[in-house]
Image (cartoon, rainbow, N blue to C red; front, side, top):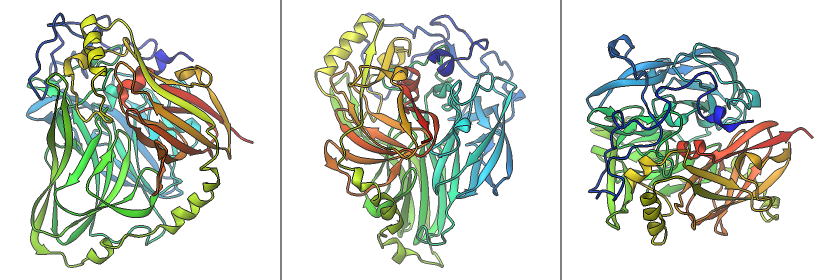
Length: 550
């Protein structure tokens, strides 16, 4: 199985401007702080060529304007016709071409009951091969959407039919699994909201809101081009400078005073980890990727890595505007300083009028979720078992400009942040391509790396995996670690036990951290494990594992 056709363009369908950096078409990305020029690379551009959606388009008005995402409620066995197409969008006053599922931003919100199976007839109408991955769902392997593994790529003009099964309540999402760094960043994403049959599964609330968090990298001319034959920004991933919520820069939610809102949060950004705060309003975390928590907790903020989901409830008890912010401690590598930084994501406008139905008392009660605890209880016998497999997360580089390598070596000896909240070295990051940066999953027991690892399991196995994020590499980086088709528990970080468990499919491994996870192997097939930073995935940070029936 060759990895290049899977994760880049498919053979016979080349992308635009293949064949090297084009200084006339490239533009230096904007940055948030004064950045002195790195000696010797002024005027440099990535070694790959630039890509934009329909680069040869002259008249953008021939493409339809994207429409806000619709809610599609689906019964068991119902069929949804869905396409990926080229759409016109205006963001920050700039009109340009993006992609959309059914011409929408985000794609349709699919609502279904737990246990339902729906049919999605998908057609590819963009210029790139694509697939649809139904992230977090424990569905049949043949519909997982991994090209050349579970299905052939869907070439332009072709179709594929998915059977999408919903075994677990909660919030999930769908996106391409080919060149996510381009296709997902250009708008191909949407949510699935799976309703529980139990009427009291969640506490009562006044409103439910689905929020998709994203960013996009733009300047005064529009989006900064992506790499054509391989991603740029391979070191840290492509951070955007324009924040989007449900595809909007000006998200607003009007509510009455005293309202409790349940927010379903999904991070679809290529690399950015958000730290979400709701002004001074109290926030209760209820659930994450694949289940509720053992018990609800008060939190000051919600740290959400790429591909993670969180369900939180917020009480808005004071009138006025409540900002939804991304509040971080940013780093300026060139000046060697930290500084607080806030990106506004949206606003909740709380009226003077008090809500007619108060759920404040229920909100102030932290519920114990006995059903989750009972489910997890059967796995506690495995918590202290020996580690079955280990992974080291690391990186190797080749053919990067000497000046970049020297600067990285200097920085590596100073400080490595556990989480990269911002792009602290924008020019070096932009100039690094996935042809020069090789992110790796390494099995220290065998020495095998990435697609050569090839672990084998059987249905019913409970597998303990120890993941170590090596801080001694030339550029250590946090990694959101995603497992397809199964669910897992994060048992501990650096031997500190997790005292409030939740079933996950994606979790952040900070720099220098050892994370133990326990994977519930229930689903046969060939499945992926990978970093969900789009540029790291396409720079090799992925492997396959096989699950067979007993």
